[in-house]
Length: 80
Image (cartoon, rainbow, N blue to C red; front, side):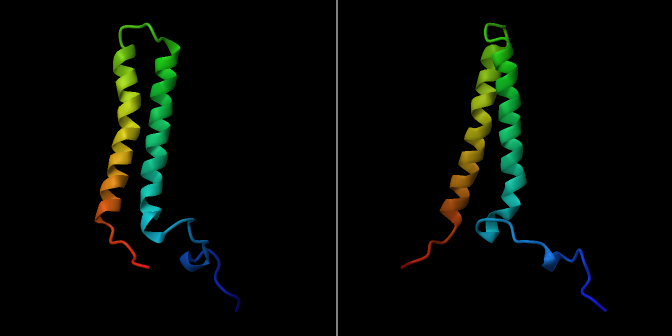
């Protein structure tokens, strides 16, 4: 009997360090949310809600970068 298809061990490993794989969907989601906010902002830059949309579009990636920085600070470094 041949090997079973669809096993988790048969799937290719995601690129990058293994500890960061679970962050990928969240970072992709933040990129999509930022793009959506920027599209809404670009549609009417002089509207009454333009300032709020601009702040949201800037705050989403800032929050993602802050989370990454916090994770990097908690990750033990490798000595040469």
